[in-house]
Image 1: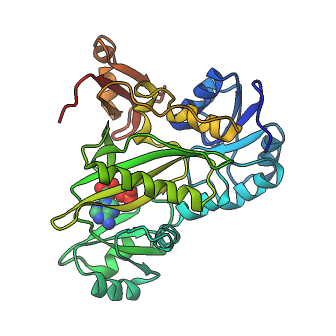
Image 2: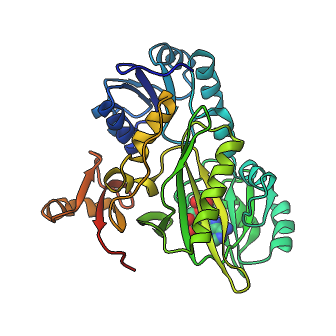
Length: 364
Ligand code: AMP
C-alpha cells in the first residue's frame, strides 16, 4: 500500500463514537474521512467530510464507498466478513480480514490464541443442548455459556450455576452455536492497546486496568497496578497476536490477571478487539499520541507516534446513560478532560461520553 498523502480519504465502516474519534484524529492530520454506517443518526457523521447511510450487506453501496476512499478501516468487529471481502477487492482494508475472522467467532479466537501458546479460559464448543450437557460435565459449574458470534458488553452470555437448567440456558441464547468457558478466578482485568504498521514496527501503551459494571466498562486507569513482569507479559502477548495476524492498525487485547501463589501474576487472554478500544480512551488526553491518531497513522502507512504517558497516572471514566447530564459540573472541574459523543437519547448503560483526569501522583 502506498503511503497516503495529506488530503487523502480514509473510509470508516461504522459510525459510533469510535468512528467519530477516529475521524477527528484524521482531520488533525489533514486527512478526510468518509463514514459508512447503517444508522442515519450516527455520531461519526457529524465530524466526517462525507458519509453514506447504507447497510453492511449492500454490495453496490459498499463498492461506491470503496471507489471513493484511499484505504478503508472499521470501528467495530461485527462488520460481516463478506462485506469486508467485497471491499478488499476494491481498496486496501486495514486491518485485514484475518483479524476480523479471528475476533468475530469466540471459538476461532480461542483456538487461534491456543495455537500461539497464549493461555485462555478452558473452553468447549457447544452446538446444541446435548453438547452443553457434555461440556458442563467437563468444565463443571460455575461456567459461562457465550454465543460464538455477535457478543459484546456481556450480551450473548449466561452464567451456568448449580441448579441452572441447561436446556433453558441454551435456548435463552437463541439456540445459536456457542462455547462454554470455565470461570477465570481473576484478581483484575487489564487490556493492552497496541499498534503495528505494514513494515512490522510495533508500539504499545501502558497496560490499562479496567473496572466493568454490569459487564460495561466503567473506569480505566493507566498504568495498571500489576507487577512489571505481568505488564511485560501482557504487552508480549499483544505483540505475538498482532504479528501472527500480520496486523495493521490499533488492536485491543482484553486480559484477566490471575494471582498464583507459586509464580505470581499471570495473564489469561479473554478477547481480541481488532480496532481502537474503549479502554484506550485515556490516551486522547493522557498520551503523546492517542490510540485514534495511532490507528490513522498505521493505516495511512505513516510512522507510529509516541505512546508515552502524561503524568504518573491517568484515569478515564465512561459517562453511561444519565451520567452524561453531569457534564456541566465536569466542565467546571479544573483538569477534567470532557468528551461528549453527541448521542441521544441517554438510554441506561449507553456510552454517551467520557472524562479523563491526569494525576501527578499514582493513586490506588
Ligand atoms: P466478554 O463479553 O467476553 O468480554 O465478557 C464480559 C465480561 O464478563 C468480562 O470483562 C469479565 O468481567 C466477564 N467474563 C467473561 N468471561 C469470563 C470468564 N471466562 N471468567 C470470568 N469472567 C469472565
